[in-house]
Amino acid sequence: MSASNERRDIVIVGGGIIGCCSAYYLTRHPSFDPSRHSVTLLEASEIAGGASGKAGGLLALWAYPSNIVPLSYKLHAELAKEHNGKERWGYREVGCGQAVAKGRPLSDENAEGGGARSGSSVSLQKRSAAALSKLKSAGVPQDLDWIAPELWREYESMSDPGETAQVHPYLFTTSIAKLAEEKGAKITLGSVKKIGYSNDSVESVTYTENETGKSRTIPATDVIVSAGPWTRSILPEAPISSMRAHSVVIRPTKPVSAYTLFTNIEMPANFDPSKRSRATVASPEIYARPDDTVYACGDGDHEVPLPETSADVEVDQERCRDIFNQVGSISDELRDGEITARQACYLPNVAAIRGGPLVGHTGTKGLYLAAGHTCWGVQNAPGTGKVISEFVFDGNAKSAKIGSLDPRNFL
Image 1 (cartoon, one colour):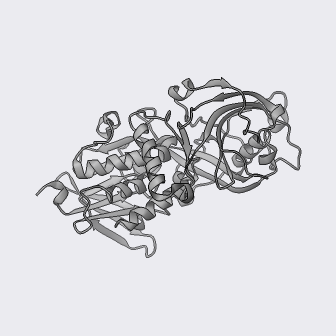
Image 2 (image 1 turned 90 degrees about the horizontal axis):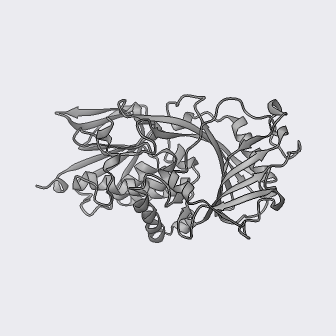
Image 3 (image 1 turned 45 degrees about the vertical axis):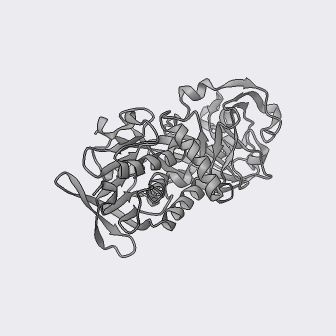
């Protein structure tokens, strides 16, 4: 009997976009048979409760790593076409560029109260050398009219048509989860406590059920650990670290055109009372969304350790105020808009290599790792889910050459 014809109890740990895409593609693999194969996704808090629900949602052909990006970008387009992603999760192509501008002083009635936050900041490192090589001087696009024209210093294009797109991460993740359920995946809310082994093979997964608090142990022939920054709570040897990132969602005073912007804003001296003698430079990312909101995020930080679950993430209100004040300093539509969310999440980074993730076999039979996607988790989730389904049912990845992402190189 071939491996694909055997009884398989597949357990996915983590209900972010990586886990949900893994469930989706497992249930759509040609070998999947719900009469012989079960797929159970275990999530400690809620589907898309972490970065998968609070990310920007940018998709880019120049993202990294280059061995999985083209596959994943293509799969995003296919998913949107097959499941009406335009309406369900806001899939669309967008313009992308770098905006260099001079911020305006904010009057008391316009600025979100409070001075600049204290503590250190860390770059999200979203743009690789390939991305920066795409920069080319260009005139400000005519429809990019929601940045005050007198504040522009330079605009550089970062994509040709068809090279950048976007999704609404929360809607995308929850939609993919529902689509996986429709094909037989079971989603259970519970905190995984341990993976059981027998003769160097996975045997079971034990978790605490959220609703009852009871401990449950279920059989497992295959376990995919896709717990993002929480991966080390399941696999302590995994070289996955975490970084907190803040963002705000703004409903502007009027709908704005479809652009994603990496900014370089010279902030006026009065933005930070502790630095009155000189201007500061801020680099928030700004993403217009098709639901008539705008997402803006700032740098990351390591000020607060990773909490137990995504439900326990602490939001620094001053960091959120900073982001709003920064983007409001160059846009009337954003400055006078309504903040609909102030939020934070933790991004999973691979300590051993820049750019992660780690995807594939771990060296233990039936145990797979799919984590460490940095700020490109949403972009690379369909490709990751696709190859995970191939690892489980075919024994190796067929759709992309991802040997450099092999977890066995680092575990």
